Length: 382
Image (cartoon, rainbow, N blue to C red):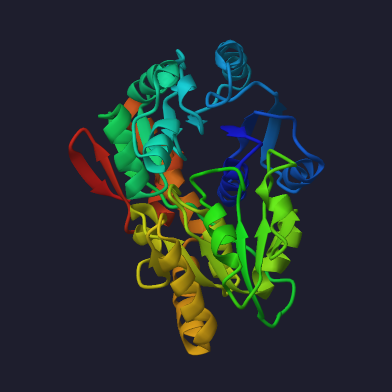
């Protein structure tokens, strides 16, 4: 399994590896993007079913990445020769085109072309043509393509499809509360402050007119950017998962007025911590949280402010929405995610080798219902 160390894919990979460990699945985790941090090494050490092979090769969405992508491909093929995996699980796109011997599955967590369309309102410029070609090749040669929401799968199909087979498997998250905390009167936002898709700047822009403070957790690329000049907003910087969890547990409201969010792990984490949600009205977030949040058009600051003011003024509504969100979140578990991926691996093995493996038998015994997979127009339920 590949994973990058610089975003939400890392959290997803750790949750999935832990869930698969319950079924005796051993994983070689090939990391890229940056060296593992101390906390990431601690996470890996706590899981007995992972062997890490570490690198700092650039990821395909980074600046001038292609020499690194090529070198990473050679490295990954050497790892396959060394460990002889049953299935190759890629959490990046371009390496789907490598001449793997094992069946390969590509998971699309996000992509530049759909991000550009959502945030800029137009197609990505010509400098992203090489990216488009590499991603298209990787997805076209994958034995199976997975996305965390129908909205993300449809975006991938629009920009790079069709695919040999595809499925939607929602991400899962498990967070244990350290202790019961009383909610406090503030609004929390979390994510990369510089990412236009997260649209956290909208919270900054309406903060001065809100009776509650806005607290923002996340990194900024520029120390001189506007967050240093907004005294009405508290900037928390990058937080460890433990510290961020404490902020979730205290926040009465979590706001994510996103323009682009293929799944939204931070939203799931906030819902597990009993936050009332205000979310951008985009298909992926409607898909997961419809009826359990207030939705606002991402470009409408007045609507965002009105939704926040409504929740601030109506404690009963906050309680109702937080309970509904928590109910949805309680079903988006790593166990269910792991069961679904286990069945996916068995289906890929059966498809490519013509017979089910022991993994397939185990998957059939434990699979969660409600997920649909498609092989070139034919569907079966997972």
